[in-house]
Length: 177
Image (tube, rainbow, N blue to C red):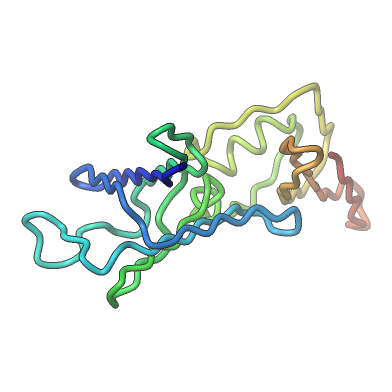
């Protein structure tokens, strides 16, 4: 008979590792930008040497699940919310959490490429890789939005960029998967 196994690792001021959970819900939806994970810890969870819950919003979390001790990483991300009630519920988001914490910059370029513009937006907080050449040419205003979607279990990123390069300020919008 197979026995469910779990290992939850939270990197805070200390590293917290739990071998038991009450429930785990992981949601990956092509309509949403962010994958989420909701964990419920057992009622008898103790935080050794701490009087209150020592983990905070933004702490890194790794969820491993499996059978008979054969664990597989099913979610990695950051803590978004922690309930104050017992049992403790922790809501997490994947690496898009970091991008959401970064305010979008309005910046004007005389010319540039997509990698330069996205690098300016994420400010080094998110590992960024742009495939192919995406020269934008000369433009005055530039806005980028990023959308995520799974197609055939492969992550695809849609980049929508809007720019204006004419005296009448008529905007041109491009989308690319």
